[in-house]
Length: 547
Ligand code: C2O
Image (tube, rainbow, N blue to C red; front, side, top):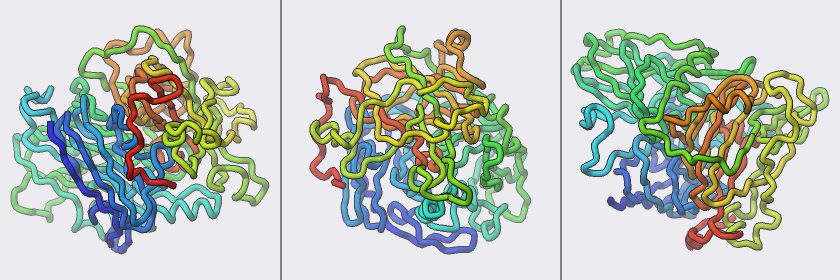
């Protein structure tokens, strides 16, 4: 195993998309940011130097961060933000994970432009568990994202000023380019040259802020081999559904008649009556060696934006490659509702109705709308002991305050207006934890991609309607469930996850739609390995930023 050192300089750069130039926040002037490539077992040391004009942190999405909680990155959870002019060095090892992960800013909406791929290959001498053990002829990282004709920070600021929901994006992107179906975009369309007969590994990440995506490649079958840096049984499909935060690795054999084939991605918008980006982003896979951009490319058929059946069929078809190593019994049985509510403003009033950040909207888990601390991160407060008082409380509820029919709109007013708070749920070190994530239909029914920091979890099952312990428990997959770090909780439905709390620290769990984080759809687990303390966590690094 090697040790790699990188410098990430956060800086503004002028970038033109859709014929308009914008100053955006980048890492090293690149959009998307630099890809990190490691072998399993490598250590990464990344010095983040903030020369931009906003405070920022960087999160290594999906990295287990075993006993390196100070390097996880969510602002005010494990560290205070790195202010302009300051720097902070993240140190961690990428172990027991292979596939694709990514890194992104974990401050406001900066991750719209501050993100990049993290590619993890098997260590020397260890074969890939697919393609007969041979490395694929070529590996292609593909970051799917969004573009705003506005600074993403201002998108949120405008929303909080008016109390409304933030704007939807102006374009979806493939590796930073909207593609040739948009005005002013054709000459910059991302193009991949392919060789007839070759098998390539496409490493997809959905880095979009608020858009779940269907992805297809015209004329070609994709065989899924990994998701969220855990291998899956090979699954052949013509369409992927990737939620924000998730990654999916697929093998493609270029065995079709020479032509130009579109890769296309478009929103899966599970919510009814909620505006979404209804455009399509494209890239081109080109069999011709000389550029022949005059030849029209072949377009795939994408599912309709509201095709929940296809989205769910895809996610529930994934199986872990190996037999699950599940604890035989569960120590903590948690039931968390996840949903968005709307504060009851008086007529014409859009602001100061009590929602987080001045909006009308509030999202919650178990009716608690998460509020970030401002003076100290939760991890610092806990580590320092005395500082904990007033920064957070350890009384996050294990069940919602009221049981009701989560799929019907018969909800009491009290549940439209969650209680704001900085609450964590304390887990005993080593506890086997099961969480039923139940979507609610309080304001709008929607698929919520729920991401847990510091852990991978098994997804034992998902379904529609209310989770019914008596009838659904027996149907859970304890044999070969997929292991992921982000699970799409189906619209008007539920998902069950299980993990062992073997990593001391403070670990955020939240919806990876940034608009829902803004509204408070988050909570954190506090895992200690001593009584009231984290014995195996080193003292805070000397350069840890202060608030
Ligand atoms: Cu990818 Cu808390 O985030």
